[in-house]
Length: 168
Image 1: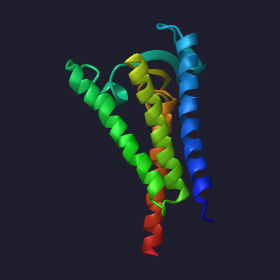
Image 2: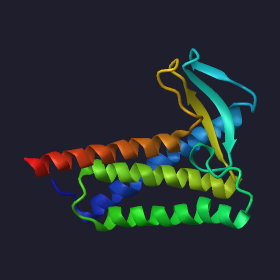
Image 3: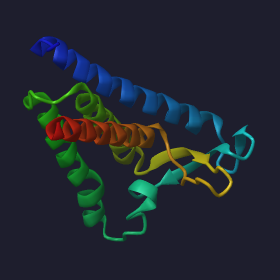
């Protein structure tokens, strides 16, 4: 069933706002209630809450870059351009399936959440860590990162579904 243009726009804007809202509320709670040296065990040592301010991109990439102009280009201007490109693609491309629309909205929402932090605080607040005893271990991350990863997974599902349809 196709959505009307108006309903589709509400759906897109709503999904992005939900992603940004969840991210910003969770970061606000982390900034307010987790001290800089505190470690809160949520599920034993498997899921830990601890606060870290990331001055770089994903997993601290570019955090040690000294040149402030390059830092602004790579951490603010380039992400804004990419987010606008993705947002335009969501709005203009008519044949996106729902997995792709939701996935791209999650990526845009997560990107906006982290970009907002970079602009306002000059760093991104990360506060979650998962360690499944050597089987799986993450860096410290936040809900915007979860949104981007979820969005990426949904895009992968969409591509696989399209490939299966084109092969049959």
